[in-house]
Amino acid sequence: MIRDFPYMNVSLLNYEPTVRSRIRSGEFANASEYIRHCIRVAEQVEARSGPRGASFATRQELERLLDDGMGSPGAPVTASRKRLIYQRART
Image (cartoon, rainbow, N blue to C red; front, side, top):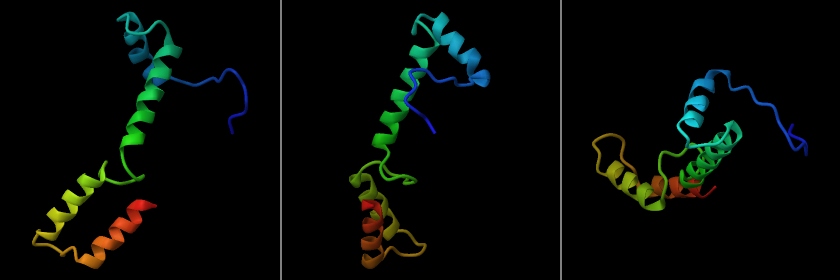
């Protein structure tokens, strides 16, 4: 559990070459700056990825995937199944 401490130790042994390379390139002043950048990017990706575990990012993409599924020769996506998918996507 993270408490209200101003500092936190994190092991980056496997990522040390990458971190050092990014600092040497001049993109980042130090490891903390690079790690904060990585966390911000991860948050942006998560915010745009749709519901957790989903393979779509937007409602339009979900609609396209459903339409593709309705036209596929495999198990058909019926209207009731489509409603169920939308209900699960909202949660």
